[in-house]
Length: 130
Length: 426
Image 1 (cartoon, rainbow over the protein chains, first blue to last red):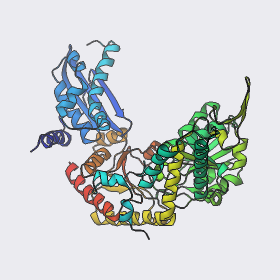
Image 2: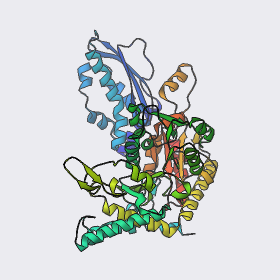
Image 3: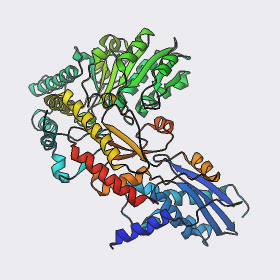
């Protein structure tokens, strides 16, 4: 199996059986974002304990890249601090996915990370007690 | 009937990409035959200079070539007067020109009637006029993807100042009855505009038989280069209209406080035009004429017939295609979904109610999977979001054909689709 085939298989596993999929009762924050070009949708739910992400879930609909990436992002986010999540770079996620994606599909891959970071940033701005 | 395999050889890109490459995105832009590429490079190699201005031989030659290109394009669409051909960048610019210039004459309460199957280029320029209190009205489609003529007729009113419709839908492939629609427009005293971006490349089009007041189309979708397009307009209308952009070429005289305009069509061609582009478009017209537009149309219909046959034969689970099945009113455009992809809100409401929403394969995955097999298709809303939503979806996959596509291309599309459907099924 080549590296790309292996990475494809990992992503497809996340797509077919996503981790952390579902709605969350009374989350600390939630946000729904779309990619208007293709209609991909990702809604993130986060429960914080202090500054730590105690739980994170998502629901979504879209291509294998956006939904597989959402599953990977939620795995990555659990147990991290808000600052740590805000510090995750797009390149870090793209490296983790590890597939040669064109510029349009990179947008699919980054939608879940952008949604999660936007969700947490808004939380900060709205000065919600955490 | 020409040999379509032979015609493919006129397009050097297929040699360069490898003969197995299947290009099915001609509704977005077409490939270019060697004759077009050569006409453009020859102009720069032997004839390059600016048009209209020079009193030297080279410039006079360039001016003559530019003028001959205009005449050629004029003849190609059945216009008796080359002065009715305005060179613009593309169909989008032609429609923006119309929105800007015709918009001057409109007042609050006036209405513009379009259809739900328009490309964004025949929607957004008219939306600009909403700030002036002008209303945009949409005629609907029937379930089979044809235009609902009763709905269109019922939305025509004394306030309808402009009726602007696409000749062929870039998503459904529907060929609209433009002569009939033109009669409805003119009986009502409305200006009639046709978006010919998907028709002029694929079928014989005669603007005088259609009796449209204006037609917009792009060179790059008809084997010509990018950056050149055409606005056809009836001379008496163009003459009455306010200019679009100001600058060189479009003026007769300029004083400190006012200017006078050049005659049509130069009045609408401010600045140095895309001279090489016009010459390239003219070469594309020659090429299409050498095949014959009747043959081009028949080839498109034959490929669509084969598409419907393959669709039935392969019977891919969940495959849903859009647009009329009658190939007599169908351009060579095939849009489809594999499984339904309702808008997210609807999707979640169904899930919440415990209703399974199936296992749709997203158009992006379809397109990526086909790309891996060397087949180029488009996925998304195809610059027609209102239509995509009207079809109760958010994105579709589209294959579109042209003269360099063969029956084998269609067969390969379906073989690869079948494989993609298996790989991505959950």
